[in-house]
Length: 626
Image: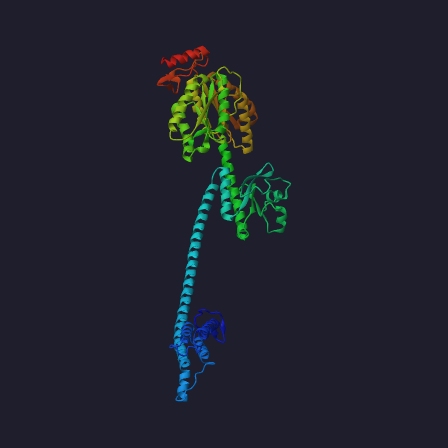
């Protein structure tokens, strides 16, 4: 084993150069001092000899080799050119012993001290190597521990990532089950990001023979992707016309995509066989663009098509529905039909119809719970404050607007009604930040007598029952009569479905020709063989005359069929007309609900009052007099 590298400057014949330099300097300086300042006998008379210093120092510091060199150099510096004279009485061996005494002691001391130094050097080397081995083992163990910790963290991240992915996929799939097309698109976008790990992607809608951008994620301002594809584009022809997906790895598809993306596929409703749009991936990592990703892309296109088709079907059904959501308010689609009917009826019977619009000014500031409370509160206020003939509509398409239609309520009474309604709403929304605006306008003024054509009512039994109840309540309040007809076709022989449909169509045409614009017709049987007619404002004798006209027209139409088809018509009086000649409001017994202001009963003003009479009536009401 080698000695420690103290003062190491290299080796010369196995001896450190630094040791040789130290020996030379020490001996040179010592000889110069002896020559110039002492007797010049090279310290022969000084005991112990000064050269012991360099021999001991070199031996202890460097070891045996360097110590022997120091002893030889010291011996040479002492004896070369400076041998003592042998005296007469001195034997040769005594003389030789005297001359070699210091060199022998220096050599022996150099060997003993040097070996001791080498022993400690070897021990030091062994300890150093052991320490190095221990440090290496420590580093290895520390590195292994760090790798284990990193693997543990990666495993935790992987498990958490998988769990997050599953949760995100679950939430996105739930949004795909939403019945709103916008929510379905947002859920589909989240699912694309989760399943495909796409960085940039877009969803297009098919509308009017072209693909229009509906949603994009990850697009930058510097991106120049197209937002519309016409029927003349090859991408449109491939995705929509051939219903084929495009993949950038295919040479033909590269030319069709033309830098617009890496993947493109049709959003296809397999149940109806209809193309609804296109899903396009503009940027995805190279590692994620594999066979599984392409198959998942196709699966997503099909899943999105099914979900979007369901949402569209629901929106279409909801647009034709009478009620709007769980609040059970009337829908905005039903508003146009009902107000047209009420306007025609009001102009015929000369009673006013007013409209109160409630608009939420800050819908974006509301919490989900506050949003869900508002339609329920509007419904409750309508039931408890207004009359049974007043109708509340929810306009979901116009973002937080509610409309109250009040038949037989002039604009002069609307201020009282609106203030009472506002106080009830504010009481129910006391702990919220909802800001409301209430506007009023006349739908039909009392003096308006221009005819209007109301659309035919819906042809369902539920609509017939609802409209019958509404007309009965309204007629009892205003005093106009309501009559009803019921037409039935009795078949004595089985007829083909085509003939039965033509017969039902002819029957409906004859009935409508005999009726006026405010009369309502309902199909109560799927094949149109049972028809109900509501005649508001028509007394029983007039209803019988109309029934006779219809029966005569039916007999003419059914004569070629002989006795195989028979028509039956029944007439009934739902409410007898009792309105006085002066056309004033009905008495309290005929009023469904009498509203109160400050604890005083309040009835709407008569329809034919002048402005002075109306002002006088309001003054009497405020004084608490009937």
